[in-house]
Length: 142
Image 1 (spheres, rainbow, N blue to C red):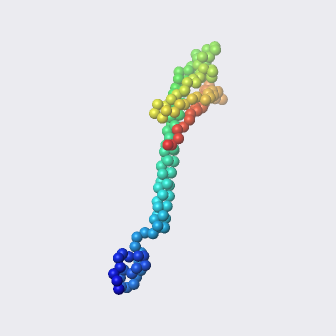
Image 2 (cartoon, rainbow, N blue to C red):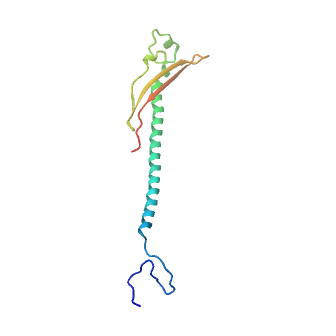
Image 3 (cartoon, rainbow, N blue to C red):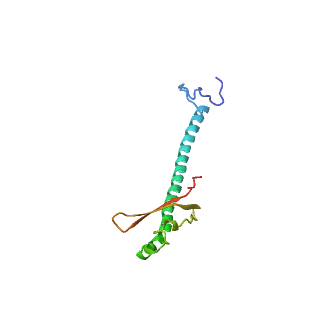
């Protein structure tokens, strides 16, 4: 029997006539590559979603800080003297005098704009309730 060079998938390696395969077929490579691409794609989408969530959370926290920046000056307006001025000149007593200045976060480069001010009396007390709605455009994950 002549000596064979190399083995083919159906060649016998030993005398006990067991068949075995050597190497990978094209189909096996395609299947394993497809599975690998699906796993990597799934992991990539998790990271992109996490980054988008972080950006969204950061802009909401910054908006809360910006609202503090707008509402802070109102603390000095809480006095009977300011309320009795005619015409009232402070935001707490005259909504037309409330700030409309935009506030920009220097880190994220997002501009926060006061959209609406709503100031109303709290029933049964001498307190006033202030609601400020901010508007901003969030950055998207890149």
